[in-house]
Length: 113
Image 1 (cartoon, one colour):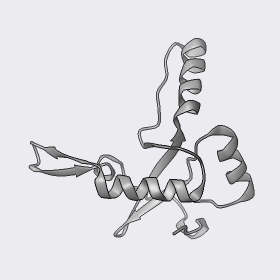
Image 2: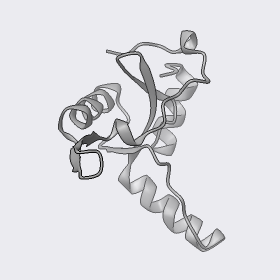
Image 3: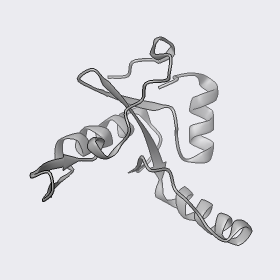
């Protein structure tokens, strides 16, 4: 997470963050915490203006934009979310469905734990 005053302010105003990265083993994933009310508003406005809406593929819904809530939600998704995939005959997780991130300077991120 880019833990800067401007990114924190933007997240509280817009109701989502695009700068949250999760490390699982040696692999990084980008997730987008989103407050549902903000997504509904964005969907409605986009449908009026453009006739369609495409959400981020890495959405997770949170109650608020606090770091504590975001971390708690990510931990829950990591520990509890999964389904049986008949083709691969294994349990697929939320993170299995995401594309790993390789093109970011991870040194600029702030570790939140």
